[in-house]
Every structure is written in structure tokens, then in C-alpha cells.
Length: 412
Ligand code: 3BY
Ligand code: FES
Ligand code: FE
Image (cartoon, rainbow, N blue to C red; front, side, top):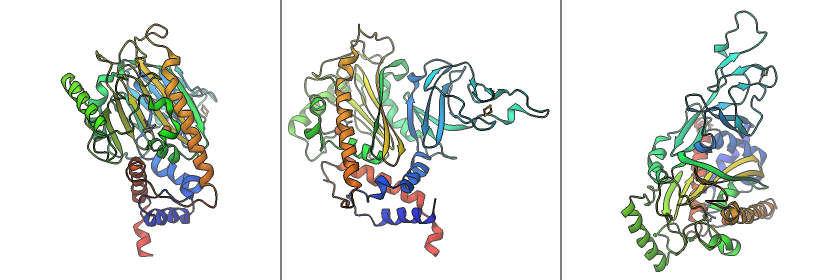
């Protein structure tokens, strides 16, 4: 990484126009992308998956955060580990499958064999004096909040407990520990990860693009929204009375830019994000008895937003793979005892978000193509309709500025 890219990014963030989109390099420059991966995805708490992805000892899944392949595994004591998927012999990737069940982690190259907590158990042919205990697989930091698994690749990770404490009351009624993945889809978007997040942070584009979603999703997620209508406020008041009576957490987490949880009603008469708003899973999540939990929306930057409903939940994970390439994984979650074909129908469950994801992919890819032109220059966000994008860009800018800040430069 040249010093000048670092300085260039710092200067552009410091001098950028408030409430305007970012300069082009932030969306397409390979050197800027490396800085995003180093300072954002290489240090923050990154959402990787759910405890119900790996319910039993020996269950694992793999993913890469930038250049770092990881295995997320549940060991024999049911503890979850985030293990760097890099053999301590000559560095081969150890675990090659996307997900599965295994008793041990065996490197395919020379069969060094590790326990599920990463300790080396066996290495053939090694010389006298070789101590397996000196060569465990390395571990990343792990944080679990209400069944959502986050990983930080930082040496000393940022705080996690404030987020955990704030969101667990919201997640508890949905019982992620007693849930299962009903369906999972990963799509590849030819767009910078920030364009994917920006697109998700506003519903300015919803009227023009998301007919299926708008059957049930209300555009506002907050009664302070200057655009909120009297009908919306009345519906929120009615639903909050119902939820209060049931002890269901709904009121927005205190304002901060990194995460947000809030429970909002769906469109009047709808209980689930289906095409017609009707319930799709008859067995409700957790121990719920009332299907109408609205949607508990949970955002955690840099890479997840979610809709937790009474009958199912939809979980999103964004993983950058290149300056103009991003993987978006969507999981539909139901109670672990729900039976496909009896309690729920997959086609009905996935219809709204499959359609919405494809529409959003097109929007993000077109956004990228326009930004790549020399004619692109940062444009103004609408403060009411795009406050979520402004919040994201402010979070990104201040996080990056903090990480790029170099006191030595002041002296120069
Ligand atoms: O519902 C979502 O996840 C976001 C919020 C508004 C638009 N978008 C589809
Ligand atoms: Fe893993 Fe040799 S590289 S056993
Ligand atoms: Fe959208």
C-alpha cells in the first residue's frame, strides 16, 4: 500500500462535502478497496452467520473476510470458535467445504489434524522435539448477540458488549437458538459493498422498484420521520400498545451510527413479508403466540440488516470480494420444529425478498456503472428520504478518518 493512497483517502474524507455521496475512488479504486478491507472489514465486528447455522458439535461453515478464510465451528463443548482456515504447517486452506459436519479439522495437504477448537492433535513425520501444542490454528475474536455471530479480525477488537446488551431484548422473542435455516441464497453483485449498503439504507427507491416489498413494508421506520403520516403514527401507537402488553421490545435503540434495532408494524393487516401479507409459517418463532410482531429491523454496520417477524426472519450478510464485486447472502429462518410442506411453503416464504434482492442488485450495478464514468461527481442526498444513507456515510467516514489519522503527518 503506497503512503499516497492512504493520504489521498484521508484528505478526501476530511474535505468531502457533507451529505453528498463519496468521490468515485471510494466506489471503484482497488487501492481504496484494500483500505476498506484493512480498516473496516479487518477490524470491525463483521456479521458472519447464526448459531442455528451450526446447531450441533462438529457443525461448521466457512467464509472469507477479504484475504482471510475462516472456519466457524462448534466444538464438542458446544462452544463456537472463529478459526483462521490456514494450516500451521505450510499454510494450506484446511477446510474446503462451505458447510458440514466433522469430528476433526484435517488439512488436505499433509493431513495435519486439528481439534475443533483449533489445537493440533497430530502431525506425521515431524522431527523429534516438534511440539504439536506450539502449532494451533489461529483464532479470531468472536461475539455472539442473541444468536447472531460476529467476528473481529483485529488484534484488540472494538467493544461488543454495548451492542449485545442493546439488541438481545429485541432478538429474544425470535428464539434464534431454537431456529433453523429454511432457505439460503447468495447472489453476486457487480457493485462496491458501500453501494449495496447505501441502497439498503433508503426507501427513496422503493416506489420505483419494489412492488412486492411495498405490499407489506412501510417506508418509515420511525415516528419522528418528517414524512410519517398520521395513519402511520396511529398504527404504531396501536401496535406498541399490543407489544407492551406482551412484553415485546420495540422502542428504537439509542441513536448511534454503528447499529440500530427497532420494531415497526408492517402494513395494516399484514403479519409477514409475503406477497399478500399473510402468515407463511404456522409454527411461530421462539415461544411466540401472536404472529403479528411487525418487523424487528436490525442493522449492524458494516455488513448486516435483518427483518425479524413473528413467523420467520430474513437475515442479510454483505461480503465484499472486490472493488466492484459483493456477495449478498440471504437466509430465511423458521422455528427448528417447523416442517416444510406442513408448516411452511418455501416458494411463498422467499417470493418477496428474492424479487427485492434482484431489483436491488440491478439498482446497485447500474449505480456502479454510472459512477465509473468520468462524468460522475458526488451528488446530494435528500436529508429526509436518505437520512439512513447519510448516517452510513457519516459512520464510514468517521471510522475511516479515525483509522487513517496519522499524527506524524501533522508535523510534516
Ligand atoms: O427493508 C429494508 O431492508 C430496507 C429499508 C428500506 C429499503 N430497504 C429495502
Ligand atoms: Fe497443512 Fe501441510 S500445509 S498439512
Ligand atoms: Fe431496495
